[in-house]
Image 1 (cartoon, rainbow, N blue to C red):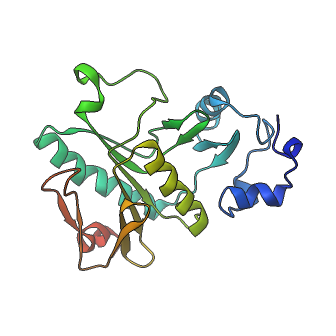
Image 2 (image 1 turned 90 degrees about the vertical axis):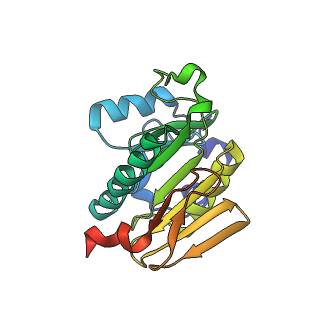
Amino acid sequence: MSSTAEGLTFADLLARLGDIAPQRIRLRPAPGEAVERDLLELHRCERRLYELVDGVLVEKAMGFKESIIACTLIQVLGAYVKAHDLGIVAGEAGMVRLAPGLVRIPDVCFVAWNQFPGRVVPDDPIPQLAPDLAIEVLSQGNTPAEMLRKVNEYFAAGVRRVWLIDRGTRSARDYRSPADVVSLGDDDSLDGSNVIPGFRMLLAELFGPLN
């Protein structure tokens, strides 16, 4: 059943998804009727990244500079995780099913080996798992309401830590839970603590390539 059939206006739908811009909503399939098969077909044919939320295909907000930050994190975090044999690091095309009908794409995520029996990464293009660490690099198209919804969804699914990186303010928010968040500035460090023990990275180092 479509969202409009449930009595929602398009404005209601945008608000429910976090006050996002209307151009990020895919109208075919109709909002409320999309499934994972539609998501995979879009990624295959159009090479554009969409997330699946409440049966709605929502284009992922992205930007060139944001991608640079994500790639820097993948390089540094990936090297540390590999050196200490902790698990895997995935990038900005790695879809995860957080719940039935809810597919998100963290810009970067870390998943510990204990989530993969026998250390075998599943072949499913959309695996059912909650990353130990989910990282989102904010783009211009993201809204505060959208990101708050994402943070809550991540923790509801079992994610242990969420980092929101804001290149515009050269800052970050380190969530231990939806209610426990630490704000970090340019002179502070991202700290893996209990999720990736021993990992630290200065935000100034992360934003360095953009200087």
